[in-house]
Image (cartoon, rainbow, N blue to C red; front, side, top):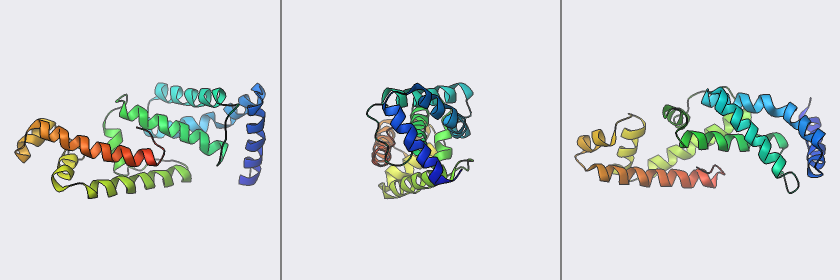
Length: 187
């Protein structure tokens, strides 16, 4: 199906959703469930959590059906909801910590062209923020995230207190969150 045909079908489905049409919701669910699950699973590798994320994305769609105003496409809208939930899951520590580092440092995951472009943009933003950090703050961040050193190990290596390590990480993470929030990813 061409992009124009898919977009026209989605626009019709959105109008039906606005009217509360359950059959239209079922069609959207059938059309996008597998794609959303696959995108989330490529990152999280946890079937149960990914099923919850996809379920919540569709629940959010249904709850907002009357007021929904999609500016791009239904597909992109659903992927954005799922992507936000994936990042929130990673941040909440429900998935092993190394996954955020893999995303941060550009690990290759099979995804749609939109997802790859989004990931590239995130990686560039993160690299820019890390490069703009003060030297000591950047060093602490890199030792923590890239070398996986504990706060105590970083403090010992840099001859600073663990509280100073925590302060530097707080500064770095606040700056990263600010950029992510500006991109529409609320961590």
